[in-house]
View (cartoon, rainbow over the protein chains, first blue to last red):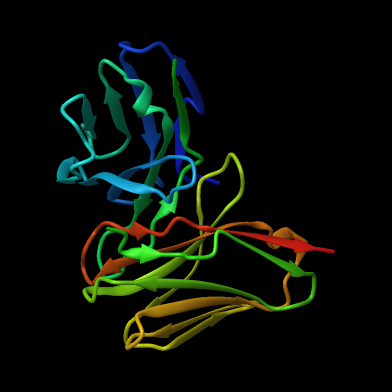
Length: 115
Length: 112
């Protein structure tokens, strides 16, 4: 099964360090999304790619956050100078192109803990 | 400002009975609605969706009802099974728009 995969599954880091997460979408999906989920909340949208183009970014995505999808396949999300408030589950999702409706398929997430 | 609201944090149901999970939304531009199920330590799994041109969509034990005038949707699970115990998220999107707005989720516990 080639569902959405994310690596690492867990990351513990000290405040001020940089971290990078990877997402591999379902192979035929052109759209890729990053969400963040904190305790007691639903997933919150961070950013969205159509192939390699980053088409939308949330206000939640501060200057310390950067995402890339260089060849339109896998994506990376980097957080620089991590803060304790960055502790969350980072979820990646993908969906096929075309059509008006938007059924997204999620990966297992990367849980980040900032000490 | 929460645009998608799931006002019940939790719901307990006995096996074999009906589970009804509710969701309200405030953004009148939303016209596509989805339900996801999430187990601990896993990502959300898509369950069922409905577009605003319908008022009901059914898939096996799962049925979603949409009342556009009330800006309300519900997910019915019949019959409920212990394996249905999970957190259920309601999500919404405007037509042709790429991002989903999620509610906070409702934890469903189905007891044998």
